[in-house]
Image (tube, rainbow over all chains, first blue to last red; front, side, top):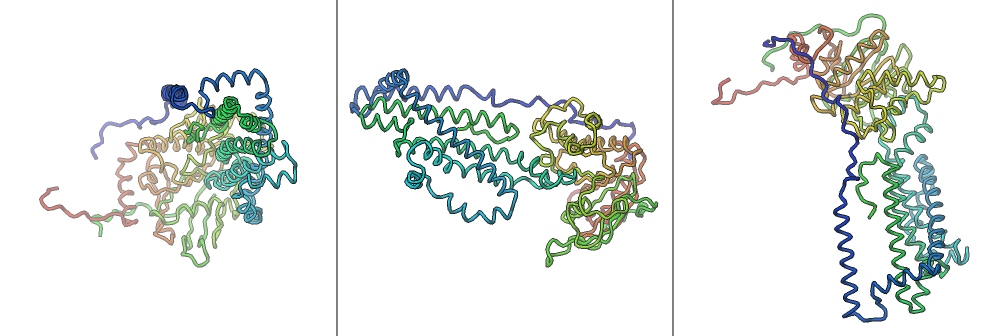
Length: 283
Length: 284
């Protein structure tokens, strides 16, 4: 033995305060976004140039004309009321889908019997394109916001339902074991461990559905001519008011973008512990 | 054949008449036609003891731990806590898992995580809960981190939270499943000492610790007694007393001749000592 001097025990290495939770997101660069913006503006300018020189079709208006039409239409109020109708149906449909999807997904996740019972029906209904149900829905519910909302619910239900189901099922065994050793009962474990643990997965489902719902609301409005932005777009197309039609399309795009940004912001706030929502809501 | 057969340290199982945990004739098959994981395993843990269970990898340590904590039913045999056979996780017992990233709840703050096992107790006043949480956090050196979320802490700190959570529960016996296997070597030493500190505080309360590990040095450093498991299907191969002075310190204890003797002996028992061939041309 060569130890001679008494040596103190090594100080614990991890006692210093951890650096405050770094916020890589906040810092994460403005620059790439700026670059993307510059590129988009460049594309617009190119399009403006092309439509002013080479492409002189009535059906391809210049971006500046579309912008002017957009301004005018917004002031006129016709389009805004369309936006109101569309977003109303959108919010109703997505809201119902969230409630129904989370509830049914949770029940299916909690009960093996329920899952075995419903599985075949679900697997049959899920791949059915909701657009294929529009004729049926019109017969049953008539043309109008009820059909629109029903179609949105149908299409956006599945991602939420399945993400809830797999989220609840996929909760790791260790966290459940830990709760069991603390004496929690099965339903307590479900409410206090499985559901919160599934929240990240549920949030992903809602994000996916929020995009699907917008596609559905516009599609149904276009197909059933039942008002809203979709109907506005068809109306302008039939009237060959192409600038106004494009203005409507631009508004749909802006809405979609705003929804994606809002959803990923919400996701970061609500399920903040999820390390892997690096996607900026653009998927 | 080993070059040196270490002289045997004092052997022997718990002898006094106050076992808190008694494992009898434990057998486990996961499937009726499957292999035996444990084959008639039995030992006792005295009140206030720190027992380490070591065994070769894959010998069924985790299975044993899950059976002892009531999370898994044995095929035959019993686990008795304070004389009563357990069939579900008993309230007198708490468990610290190896995988702290999974055992902590990332949506709860450190404070709420530690309070979690107490939350369901309607009889305990809130002030008492807060006091216990504060005390448990202080005992692992995490006062001031109440408002942090586990994701913002280092691995070592997260495992401290897990230990504090188990302590706040004030179990009579604390089971630890390879608690430091997922942290780096330096952090591990810090956590080992934290555990010894916690134990010193609670020794008077008769707090018992039972740790499963594959780390021989850690077992000797921490434990009063070591239970060595055989290769699967596992039985108790040997039980050793660890007569090392308290308080134990990383450098002194680990260089104590007794420490080295026990270490060599365990290596022999577990068949880990192998003779290294001299490499021609090298002199040693």
